[in-house]
Amino acid sequence: MRTNWMSRNLISTGTFLALASGTCLAQESVPTSDPVSVTESIEKKYLISDEPFHEDQEILWKGFLSGARGFESFANPVGNPIYFETPLNNTGLRLLYIHHEFDKDSVLGGGHLNVYAAQARLAVTERFGLIATKDGYSDLNADVLPKDEGWNDIAIGAKYLLIKDVENQFLLTVGARWMWENGDAEVLQGGVQELSPFVSVGKGFGRLNLIGNITYRLPFDDGDEGNDILQWDVHADIELAPAKLPGIFGIVELHGLHYLTDGDRTPLPVGGLDYSNLGSTDVEGNSVVWLGIGGRLKFTPNTSMGATYEFPLTPADEDIMGDRVTVDFELTW
Image (cartoon, rainbow, N blue to C red; front, side, top):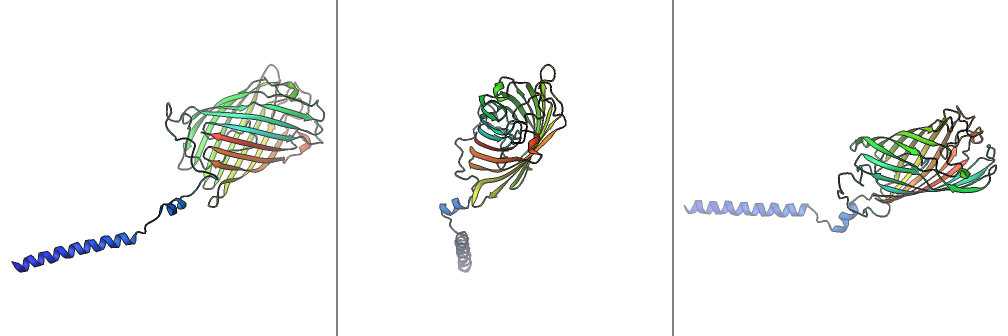
């Protein structure tokens, strides 16, 4: 009996020591990390701060204001801002400045155009959004026209996110906008109303993102007050140094515009490009293709700034595209 009692005690003591030893070894095998090293190991996504200015709480219903989340790695397009609509659905305000030079050998004889504008977008649901893409004020100084300034036409519309695939970073959006003829004729606005349906698509490949858009501009007025125009855009962005300088994107964009019909309002052999629909009488079959190079800085989840320098790939003297600088500042929800 004494032997069995001692055996049981020895076994219990051995088990306790083994468990205690194992616990100590387990504790020693997991190094203690201080809070600083843990924080430093988290990958930063934005240039200044990763903290949004609000929490993404549900307001009224799912998707209201917040729109479709999960595509934050995309950098929005910069060039052709009126007709190149992003496939992303979100809420935000975009401030725009455009300095457009006319080629000195074109029918306008050189000069320039400055545009100051703002765009607004409202995500009504996760997939449906309202857009206001054209407004603002223009300062026109073309050599063959009187120097003048005035208000631009206003365009509003809606879009719907048909395909939303966060896992594969793919989006497909359709929509349309309506432009009134409320602008000032002194700055080549106010000539025709226009409906412009569009399709926009986006696909992410890690650090590289591609966005494409196609738009048909259909004038609505008696007779041939405007030109039918087909536009397309391709955008590529890549985050340049995510480990050291997160939120800095390089951007390359290619834009194309094709005049499909002649109008009967303006006796010109050039059209209004993406700035205006002139209803020119001798442009059917003409095309303009231009390239934009620039970048976007994502400061925080809610703020970014983009800029591109654009120049024509088709002969500059055959239309009004000399070169252009576009700068924007985005505030998003």
